[in-house]
Image (cartoon, rainbow, N blue to C red):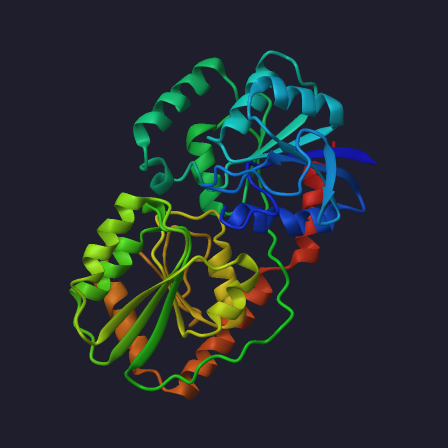
Length: 376
């Protein structure tokens, strides 16, 4: 059995680190009978200075029935030591800009590693993602290309747009396109009754510029909607200045639009939380997959999202809206259309959405493709 080492900055018991954990966990479950898997990760959650409690650091341990090494320090000495202790055949790295990825690529550059390396940028090479803190990212990309750190690296894309983004920068590398896996949904959650001229909308994500919450709020503040809209926001406010900007927009909302900040929701409760709404409003600047989008559709919510995700042409299929961020009118009109829906029409729309995502997410087929990708 081949040894597979998965490097990811955050893994269980992390709860605030977004979609990467939710991508890797079903992958580990699906591959555990075919690969000897170890995860190498940090010992802290996103935004936390406190290490996990009750977890052994810098030694092989088991969590969630998975072999894991939690790193007490993220430096080249410690990471190299732990990689050597695992002695993997394949290293699967998540994130392009993270320090853990940079260290692996430097070790590979100096010929300290003699293994197949697969790198999943997780949407970080998209135009929207690169526009955030662009100066620092451009410096690193320049150095990366100058040293040819991607030589021999296989890139893992999770959608056609992801392939295009990677190919723009690393045209000579092998790129494999395999969609992310999603945790199976085992419960059918009843959705709230949809009354004409009333709409319950939700945003669940990290509150950060890339997720574009301020854009969503500006749509609600800018356009006139005939009816009552409730818009609930869930997620860690990791960027204080950005959240202040959002709060200023919220303060200007008309009386028929109620915006509530609900705080952080544990990933295990996301689907149950989503089931309290009709519409998932997420005009993101870029997602290579978008777990919250997928989970909202699995529950039966109508997605109102940007066209910077793999979930495109939703309008033609009558399963939602994937719109250009340059067309604010289209977002406003989509909300007006949803406001007018009766409960009967909403339930049919919701059924279409669930059927669509069930066909798109085929974990069994995808696992077989991952076996081929990771095979040495």
